Image 1 (cartoon, rainbow, N blue to C red):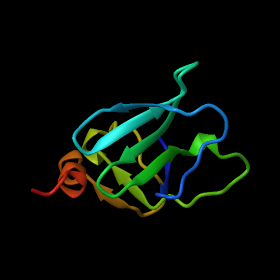
Image 2: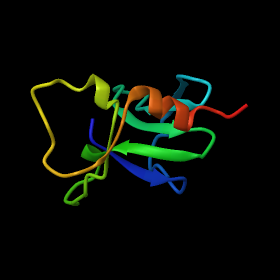
Image 3: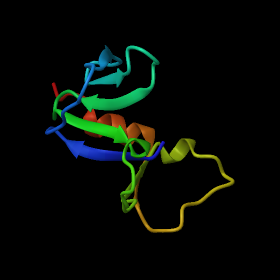
Amino acid sequence: MFAVHCGSDVSFNGQEPSRYQSSDWAERGFCPTCGTHLFYHLIPSNEYILPAGLFQDQEFNLSSEIFIDEKPAFYELKNETKKMTGQQVFEQYAPKD
């Protein structure tokens, strides 16, 4: 999934998205009518991550790849990015005790 880190200043017009807390540190948002995935919300930092497909006519620079250890061997993205394994992602975003 290509996603855009949008920070905490995110608002939704129209019907309020449904939310599902998928872990201790994150929740997922989706359309309550059709089920379309709308966001991933990191609770500790209040950061919203939205699918790039929700934005029309905008260009983005790919800056990072996560879960790189799970990517298929048959593709490689062209530009240099920060790469993180799944374990590194969990270590970075999980709540600190």
